[in-house]
Image (tube, rainbow, N blue to C red):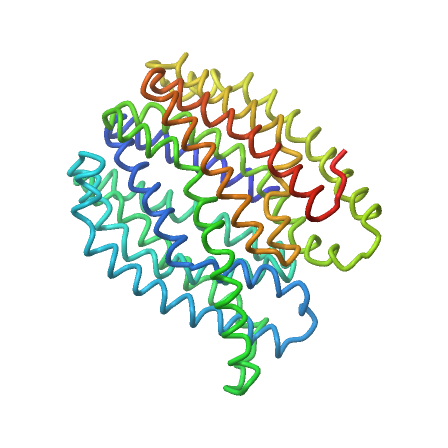
Length: 408
């Protein structure tokens, strides 16, 4: 929770820093590059980190198998991410053409190298999540945002090239990899190249492929509104929306923290044969989450205007508050299910997880495509907020139909 608070505060400071130093247009470029970076990072990871997140809790006390799972995942992740980096570089012209922005294209080129390290970090952080090493997990999660803040600050004050600002992503992931690798050494030993290692290469690759599309769409889904807004409107409009929505995304990390705590437990709950008992555990967790997150949301919505005033942000304040309130409020109302977002993956059903996320993503995209052209910035917030409720409907249906779990 402390890490969550620090990540949220640092994210706020990054947003304010970029807007005040460079304006909303540069901030729009920065966020569009970040959205593309997130999308490509999921391609680079190939879903293999979800295999690590799924199997490590089951073999937490067996060091040899743990090491085989991790090193085979790192090998697969390295190969896939190198291919993605190369293809991303070849297609850089298409990015500028699609978003009608030379600045986005230039910033994108500086961000691409970070994809390799992002993949390796994702796998290592998932490893600690699976082991329930939450102290290390929390430190690494905060360091990503802390390092990003440091590099953004340096570029803003010592380099006038706005595109170079986006190299902060690559520098952040490269530095974080050194720390995450060193922090993982005490929990590992080098595995032998035997049949067991080849077995886990196959398992990780297969499971990752099944989970990949769902995980890819899940991360793109968080930036679908920014992408669609960027297609219909200019960088300045995207900057206004991104400024407020990034605050909301920071708040959403509260539910993500609880989800990360609960994920390793879900992997074990599936072995309890009494579905009524599992349903009871999940309901208790969902209700507690709902109360906590909604209380925090009410407080955040009330104090948001004062935060803007504190940092002397005077333009577009009503728009910022409206976007933040819509996204934060609706997310809070569905927060009990947001913490169960990975339940199908943790239950060993990656294909079902993919189908679930596909329908959630499709609903978000369709809602944004319908509403954004007519309602602009506010429409993006309304569409995304509505998609949260669509997600809950799909999730409840699948949990009852496939997992036979009661959500009431």
